[in-house]
Length: 200
Image (cartoon, rainbow, N blue to C red):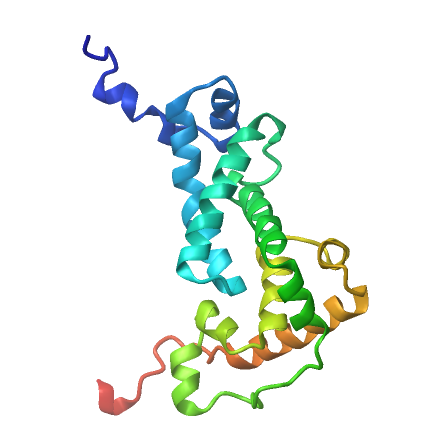
């Protein structure tokens, strides 16, 4: 028998809030679940790649995170976007996958790449491009900054997840943010009407 669902009814999920969708998803509504995944999967995958995951691993963990998030959707309270909530789940799954490797990287002596400031060429290429700027950080700095300011984990949560000292996490985050500020210098916008006479 053909489905009685009309084209209009198929478009309704996009008009609902994340919390409304989550409540429907918790009751088994497939369309609501699909809309939540559509809203969250892209940003989750982007976060994982910024944390250092390759494309295949990022796709794999994104899928696992979506399954986990939908399985626990009744605990979602709408205090943040569903995508933000799913990013925390994905970050924890990523840490679980590579805890030993990440702990080794984070506990190693920091080796700073030569980032005293962007060259003119690098400045124009990296300015306001967070993904490329993060790639210039060391692996421990990129991981800690992404976990803290991307996934929203606290320093304590990161230290506990990786079984490393709290001070080590804070150090990597501080160094990483300092380098990002150097890499992502924003040139002041030209004043309105500030063109030269030759431009007129």
